[in-house]
Length: 164
Image (cartoon, rainbow, N blue to C red; front, top):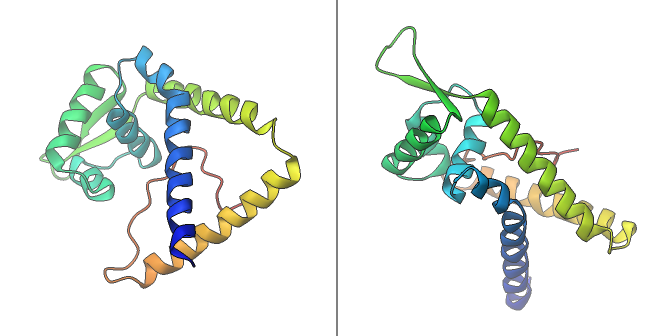
């Protein structure tokens, strides 16, 4: 691939990601949650029962940052901490009903925003884009699986339908 196309693809994906985050930020701000808090909550929702260490490894973020964020989420009623029954030193994290409701609200807002934008784009163009993005994602998965250290754990988005 030509270098300018790689740069253009990186810029387009980055810009699209930022704009989608901007669409849901008003909902997060209502609950006084940062982008980091939303990211951590999304991981907890996708893998209930993990520990802070598990989250730090998956997100590749310092354990202290994850721990502080989990404490904030717990204070706000989004995360429940439960001790491990065999090893009381371990604390497992679970999303609360409040977290599930927030996740559904954010997902609905993301769908609403994206739908409004895509209404301006021809359906065949959207379908072709989805197909091509799946091809690129599959290539990433193959490349990651072949890389030293093997595949890293993905951080899924609730409602992730990339493999349909």
